[in-house]
Length: 333
Image 1 (cartoon, rainbow, N blue to C red):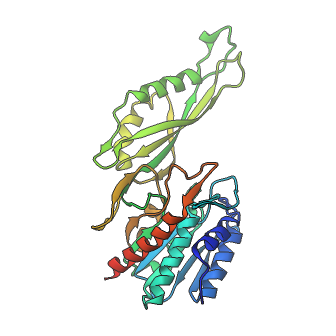
Image 2 (cartoon, rainbow, N blue to C red):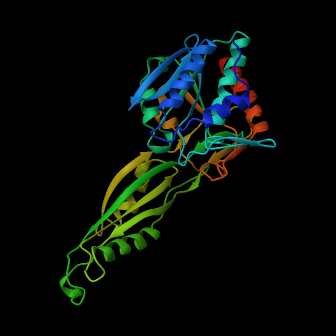
Image 3 (tube, rainbow, N blue to C red):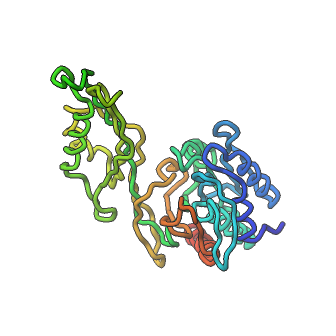
């Protein structure tokens, strides 16, 4: 059966709201569509009607993979000139459409060892990828080709994440007698200032670790010495998480540190003949390690992902089909 064309397929996916947590309708449509094309499809339950969509012909040795959840708000598709707009056009429903069409091209010439792994939840904790990693087809698969916006370049490495909550405890007192209290906010501020002074790890490909203080809160009233305060710090890591331990140890006399989320930095497989670059974002790849040696490449720019005018060039999507087809052919050779 003939698949939809590239732009109609991408627009159909974009026009189904799959904001993280609401991926059920998109997953069911995608599974039905792949069955219509003749693929064996597993709708792998993740939670609350949300499913990963895993499709294959013969047992796969290479899988093309990406996510179909999106950040809010939901934005429907439109085409202006040679650009495709809408939430997910760049990250990553346009990529998904290109991967489906690449797999169909390969099937048309008799190559049946390519599978498809499309997951939910990438934008918030990767619960879909963690579930997909336990799928029985992962055993024996040799390569995972993951799709994220890399401007069509093969990634050499991606940063990881360490999200840490810093909690300070004080003692409340009337603000006219601060000597009777102990300010948790002062402790937290001192810890954050000291953190700036710490040496952070670096890597030849990814550069130096950096971080942002994304959330901060504390106190109970303007005229009360604060009994509690906390902040959340997001480190963009470049190596083993243990390398950050000295920096965190340096502030533990002031605050308690609690890890909230960690995703390791990774170095990736590349092939001769493809342009390469390293990237500062994280992906599902660390949670899909049973699917084989990882590669990362996709159309579009991460600078446009998650923006109000998210878009991707239709020509970039067409080139991505050729890239995924060429990569799978090389890897299977």
